[in-house]
Length: 227
Image 1 (cartoon, rainbow, N blue to C red):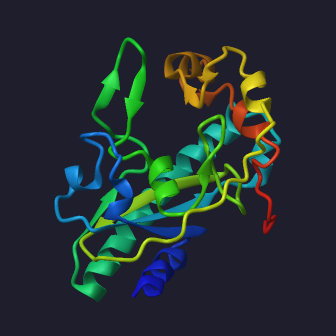
Image 2 (cartoon, rainbow, N blue to C red):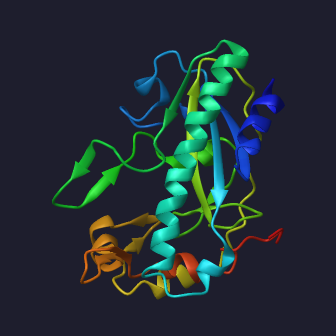
Image 3 (cartoon, helix red, strand yellow):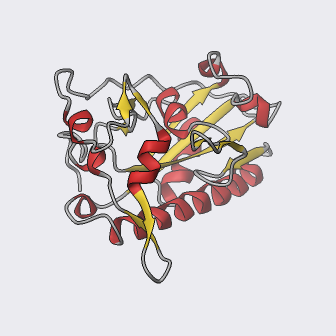
């Protein structure tokens, strides 16, 4: 069943898919555990689609922002479609989660927001990757180019093995390149990062003005170059 479920996600366009049993979330903060969202959750199916390497080689202001936003909608579509297919095929219950917004947790003073679940930590729990010093998810094949989504289900599935870290221990490029020193001790001060990274054009289009900690990473495009 596990491989059949993964095939559902890959057939819909996901590049990676992993499983995290509910036991993998024992240390999740209160309010951000899968069972806080769906009390009958026994497994979390985590998946992702990749952004093209070319977006790492151009100014991010318009092109990166546009397609990064589109990738979120694509991930949400896969979550919804896969949930419907699973419920029909396995007579189970599935809860698709938004990969980004909307969410309730927001501190205006520190400009700190938290999704319904932390997608990057959920991806770590499902064996898709590990976290780099810039706190971004690192996958062996796709580097830090994945947009991640998740589906909660009441099917009990075996967890996938944890991934091995590909972060270079002695490397500090992502920390050094941050113009506002927002990355400290494996944490990001979201206020500093948001104010420096996001803006709008004169016409009001959203922009990404900085993603250097992402693009400077030596393994940001992945180790096993399949694309």
